[in-house]
Image (cartoon, rainbow, N blue to C red; front, side, top):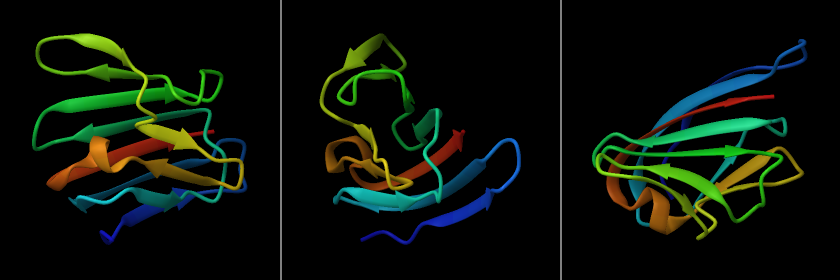
Length: 104
């Protein structure tokens, strides 16, 4: 499992978290400590961005690459009710620099 570096602010009107890690070809569970309303994940290595709103279906994420924007239905980002977020192994890949930001 990759080591995640995270900075968060909680308990206020707005909860935020951001962080980064280098992927290791495994799904990554990130403990945000709150359920985000919006999250953006960036694969800096391959220039791919995923965005999800909690109001969206749990399997639908907006995916943007250098050539197209589409709806990814592969559960790239799953927002869990316990304050954790699961990023799929397919989304994060192997040896990729991944950064993220989440807001509640």
